[in-house]
Image (cartoon, rainbow, N blue to C red; front, top):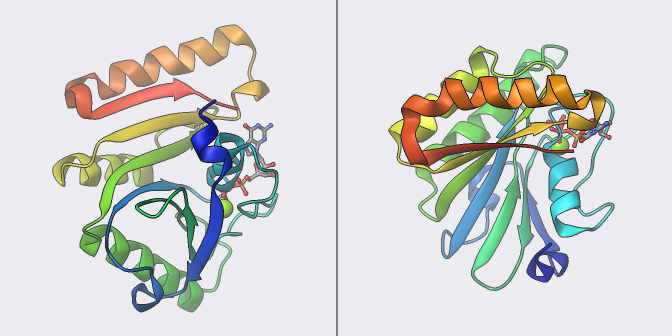
Length: 178
Ligand SMILES: Nc1nc2c(ncn2[C@@H]2O[C@H](COP(=O)(O)OP(=O)(O)OP(=O)(O)O)[C@@H](O)[C@H]2O)c(=O)[nH]1
Ligand SMILES: [Mg+2]
């Protein structure tokens, strides 16, 4: 594991695009359905238990959370999409911030797209992936919670996903993750 990430610190939570840090340097954002494991993956990567807040209840991350690796580089924990049990008004506000961030952010350089390995690639994920590729963002897919599957089914899920993304070429890659 890269010790560089262990020094990550929480920078700021933004409810709106106007509250985000200056649009400079380089950001990699973690996107995916609610409960896919975005916040957990940031904690695993940075080897810090509670850097990003996680929860059993989908819809935990409602803000854009920025973590600083150094003066130029940041990781961003994005609100999850596709979670039905949130009031429409709240959902609209956080989806709007998410869309604005992805469309406008100049320093966004790539995405980590997280999917539960047991239910990969629902429509939302496919749309997100198409959007990323269309906009030229390299995307690495993490098939999360792979500890919940035995080795055989986990590997089948990985192979299936590799076949699904083959037509995107080098811009999209995938691995199992837990
Ligand atoms: N077994 C297992 N559980 C995991 C893994 N990753 C996340 N979880 C659990 O899944 C739940 C959701 O994880 P979060 O990291 O909060 O998910 P999120 O994508 O940030 O969710 P939102 O913030 O709601 O969008 C938590 O209960 C985690 O403990 C994993 O790799 N294995
Ligand atoms: Mg989260």
